[in-house]
Image 1 (cartoon, rainbow, N blue to C red):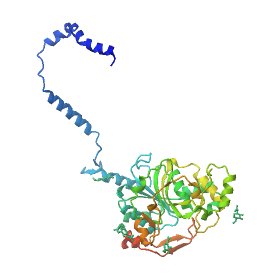
Image 2 (image 1 turned 120 degrees about the horizontal axis):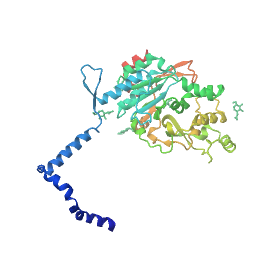
Image 3 (image 1 turned 30 degrees about the horizontal axis):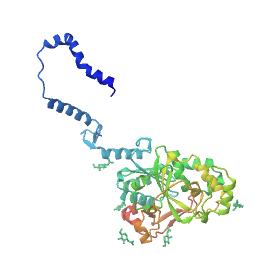
Image 4 (image 1 turned 180 degrees about the vertical axis):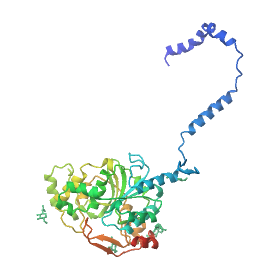
Length: 391
Ligand SMILES: *[C@@H]1O[C@H](CO)[C@@H](O)[C@H](O)[C@H]1NC(C)=O
Ligand SMILES: *[C@@H]1O[C@H](CO)[C@@H](O)[C@H](O)[C@H]1NC(C)=O
Ligand SMILES: *[C@@H]1O[C@H](CO)[C@@H](O)[C@H](O)[C@H]1NC(C)=O
Ligand SMILES: *[C@@H]1O[C@H](CO)[C@@H](O)[C@H](O)[C@H]1NC(C)=O
Ligand SMILES: *[C@@H]1O[C@H](CO)[C@@H](O)[C@H](O)[C@H]1NC(C)=O
């Protein structure tokens, strides 16, 4: 405090004697009001402030205007019932806010040939192992999409309280078809690239989990949504049983690197024994996703001359994601459920039930039934549910 302000404060009492001529007569006209005890004043103010603050508490219950009895309904069940309604009319614009922080865990999957059993096992294993199953919101992309109401209702019968939506694949396919040549498109395994293209059509999918339909979850999916991506757009587990040089001719890769100047080609030499990311389970933050992701993917597929329609993995995704993804812990790497020691500690395994497989990737003309090779799936599909879905 400066000396001048201190002196002005000290002077004030000395000035008061100058004013009594103004205030004095007015004050003497009335009886002085009784002085309440200071403690009561204090309590009254406290009570007002307390009641005021009650306004800021979140609402816990509400009354449905269309309910004649106007029962109080806890907010818990409301939020999920509105979501369910919005899921049945096929619009998900009504869900949450559009910054992606809607508190829901969006789980996206893309299936090439509709296999309801596989989707049901995926959904049930996710829900059964989740800490907050009410907050999980499934988006299944199927060939028929929401035109196939029968499949949707079958899943709804099994999981009546789940937030579940079925989408078509056409827009995603159209976009890829418009960028890729006919021959390139025919070669692609759309499931590889779809998770990265889907957010351009579904603005509300900001941060989401993509999961291949071909897995069974054993861990809690909330453990993944908490993963901090920092600057990366994608998180995945790395699979060190598959190295870069088993899919790519390293000399070709070096030659490409020397001659190409595309922004998505690494400036430092590619490591031969680089572990391939496992794209069966991804955490994607669409806001950070590179706009050129699809272009980079198609470019890599082309220059590497990846032409086999075989079971060989397309290494293009691994090269697009090279050094650009956050790594999940090893327990989230998809393992084979048939080896007991491995499955005991892993959070996710391959689906081991009977499968419907399209023998032509992406086209799905010939459908084969494949026999099952394990029993984990039966834990997540009761015999009755199995019967319902088989029809
Ligand atoms: C629902 O309510 C329970 C207890 O009332 C609470 O533990 C849970 O977090 C709530 N869930 C949601 C989604 O609000
Ligand atoms: C790509 O594959 C085709 C057919 O398999 C072959 O004719 C062509 O030479 C290959 N190109 C490169 C760059 O490997
Ligand atoms: C799992 O392992 C068994 C044998 O141990 C094998 O027959 C099966 O093909 C494997 N499944 C996958 C998906 O790797
Ligand atoms: C599986 O884990 C449990 C405890 O987590 C352990 O007691 C058991 O020995 C494990 N089984 C195998 C086959 O590793
Ligand atoms: C889901 O899995 C649980 C066991 O985790 C099982 O009890 C239940 O029957 C399954 N639900 C369906 C619809 O099969």
